[in-house]
Image (cartoon, rainbow, N blue to C red; front, side, top):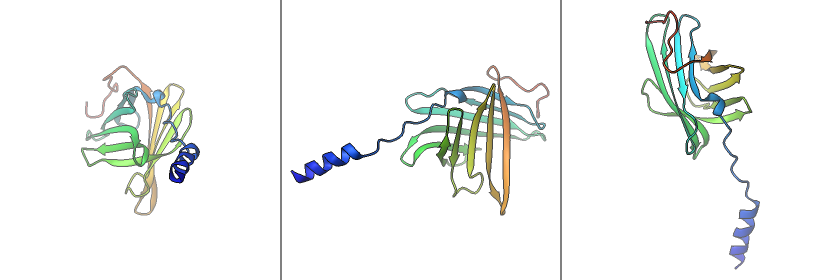
Length: 158
């Protein structure tokens, strides 16, 4: 009986898990044609707690790269799961969020340690950062919304 009362009290005082942030501002097809590269990224709307994304980048030299990712609630917390170039999944747990931005972090990953998305007017800005050989490094993108599969006017790698 006492055990039941203690359990009921704990249930009443337990902090409920925070609701995941509204990331609907990420949904869509996004294109960045800066710095001689073509970077296309798309994010689905959220369905049953899951948001799926992909990125396809063609570098200035014409080298392609890709990443498949998803955002969902996991046992570690609300997280971004990245799989660049088909690598095993790497989990980045949400460390900050607001009405127009979200940051996911993983201090144990080699690079990056942080992934940030921010909606700035009609642009979706993305940034990864961390350290490589003890030096702070970052890569940024400034995407604009485009119709699905739009290409850059003078596509890297055509």
